Image 1 (cartoon, rainbow, N blue to C red):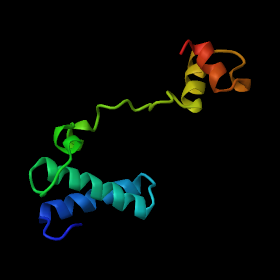
Image 2 (tube, rainbow, N blue to C red):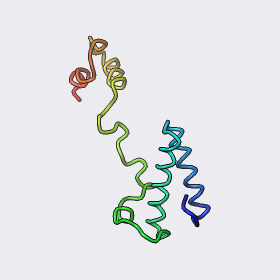
Image 3 (tube, rainbow, N blue to C red):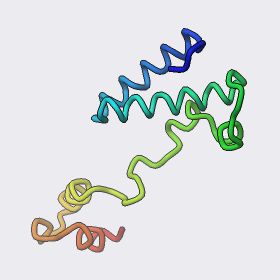
Length: 107
C-alpha cells in the first residue's frame, strides 16, 4: 500500500488480497490485484494526485461485481454441458467432446 493511505483503504486492500488468495491466486498476484483495485478506487474518489482517464470514467469495481457473465468468454464448461446433456437424456454423451456436446444441446 502507498504511504499515507487511509485505514479504510488498508482494510480494503487486505480484504481484496484475501479474497483473491481464496480464489486460488498466488500471493504475488493477489497483492497486485488488491493494489490495482485500491489505487483505482483512490483515483475515482480523488484521493490520488494523478489518475488515468479510464480510472475516473470507468465503472467502479464495486459496482461491476455481478455484471459480467459467470460463464466467461468460452461459455459453459465441459462438465456443465455434460450435466445438461445428462438431464436431457442425450444418448452418446459420454463419448462426446465439448464441441459435440454444444452442438447436440443447440448451444
